[in-house]
Image (tube, rainbow, N blue to C red; front, side, top):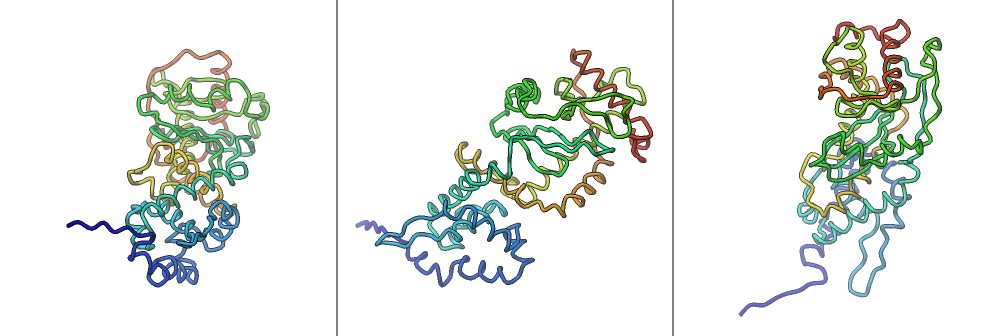
Length: 348
């Protein structure tokens, strides 16, 4: 004979308060800030602030049969999943929760972050600060193929992101499908008007631009490298500076994947849930980058940029005279005393 037993709460999970990670390990970690940061990739204070923002979205009503999981435990499970990439089955055992409860908690945390924090920490209205003398002004674009397309500013914060499956589309084809590409073309992203480069008013005003590799079209608002044919020394300098600017977005994605190690593993979720997870991770990234970290991150970007491989070349494309003129202005600026950097001659 076969007997089927069904529980409201499995016996393994009934001792959650006595043996579960949340009521013991997590409680102890709050007394040791360094270890808490290693476990959740955020400080105790940041986690408490996050709970105050999204806690109401994580609250569920208890029933006569079982008590609801408290919001702070749901948050701990969701953040640990993002920070470690640990499987939901392992989290269920360690927190003494049902597998479905862990899965639901992760989805709830990601959805709450997207719902509550999107407007404040991932605004679609772009802001710029044209003060840099070493990079293309404060806006860098790079497409991470397969799931995330994003615009990153010079402070390593995501400004616009679009999640989707682009595996069968080239970078340039992806760009044509993006809200970002359409917004720049139609001038609906509130980009500031053209201005002169630092110390180079004699070159005239130039538009704020995004930076792409050779797969992207050359536009007045979109810079790409010069094609390999007929390279001059000045053009090689421009291409190096362009690749160096692109390193900012590579760093941003590197920071994201280092702190949210879920991106280093296969994500076993439905596509719609993956979209929410990616959005939530990018919002958390912006939420956690403190102003004091900006200079350190930019210094690291500069060091890495010196050793960055050159951008790949995929042939030329027909560009407008206006776009070519904008690129020529940047090329002239990067080869001038006001716009050059000390080591660029050694890199070409």
